[in-house]
Figure 1 (tube, one colour):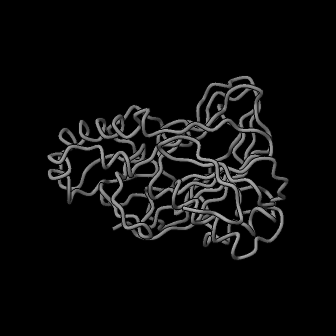
Figure 2: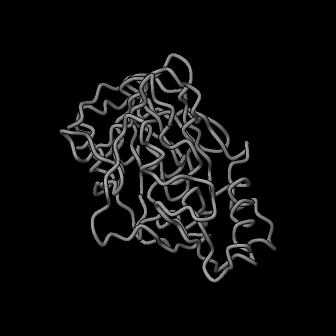
Figure 3: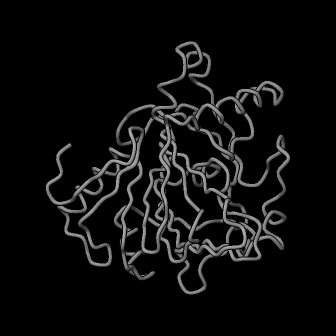
Length: 285
């Protein structure tokens, strides 16, 4: 795809591209934003360097992708409720997002996109790895695709019944500077989605799995768990990945409908602070 208004540098053969030219602190002309959006759909995750963006400017930019989603379990930024401040201080031992996942998979309408902006980063460590789930689906054998064609995955926000994982509040208590909150009363935090979902814009199939997966609809847990474990491992093969080294002023925007990501927890004793905004999605089909 040819781009006239932006410079696009692919990161790997699997996914990811750095975008050069736009100043994200200023309103983006429609033609320029349209090219950024096309690059985002093509490369699944895009990266910008050396941006000086205020919280208000980041919120304005995020709204160009869609409505802003408010996290049901994590307390937001004190002054900007649209933003989650992902922070890890020297004393913290828990790293937010340090498992393969796609954001808000447990919601009836999982996240469309996530925008992450670096405010403080360690001198070494704290990278984020991304995995292309179009490629993961394509690489499955025809027999596996046939067996799992119409299966729905059960995704839960805080009920990891078949895994040795503590409840969210216990994972954070005394181990993280981030604070949890109780979800709004009546909010659904367990949902069933197609294991092989169709991307609503590209119309291509993707493997839709991650750490929120706790079961398969109409399967016994003893049957489902080995399949989920296999797919989790399969979905993060090296040939599906790109890895991003953060700098202050870097921004990443990824497509949760076809990408998993993993925050590498290799910087204990150091500080890292990011501003995250998540964009509302639709019902997976």
